[in-house]
Length: 319
Image (tube, rainbow, N blue to C red; front, top):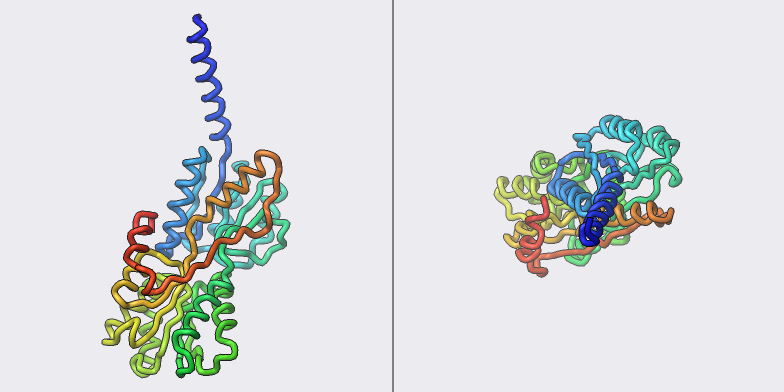
């Protein structure tokens, strides 16, 4: 065997060993479902991040049912995965299954939502400050209406979920001291476009055909987009007759803003997996423990922020 052949053989073995080591890192991902464009983008980007890093991602779609997520986590524990990513459908009811993961010494990272469990049961949570998101949306509305009377209807997210709880809290925080702005109706649309349309139809019927509604606050863009359809079908002009502010910054809401049908959105980045895998890789390398919360930005976008350019930048991200 020549020296050159020996060198190439050795290099090939080293490369193969490195590839095997990377492939040995298996991460289970329990996703809520695909209830919104934002959720689909989060799933796409998580898969992309795992592939780029040589991580074997085991994916489970819970179809918005907590019992499916609990079963998936137990399956991941039984498989002996190296880590678990969890986007929890609701905030409560996780203690037992998280304890099982902790006993198996499998780190759990929460994505985009928090849980009402002891912090030592998970490694870290990656996400936006959900209360702050609601505050940003509320601050925009306060500035937009000034001292004018404004009756607001609210499309809430899934009942019991941390985004629904926190985005409602933040919005109300922003309205404190502004008695001219009143939330007159609030109901869950379950984060879906169809749910947003259905509930908005009932709001319009209850509020003088929409004549008594000044603004809509939706806990996500998909519900806002469903509501826009309902408002149009009622013969009103969304974005003018009824101001619309929502959260997520999915491509379709930028198209709606460009069309004048929506007024503002607060961005929730779907790339939660990047910071999560960064934290895991540091932990696997030398045991470095991350902070308990890794916060992403909450940027406000309005019709003045070139919504079509924002649409083009996001349309291929898997939404």
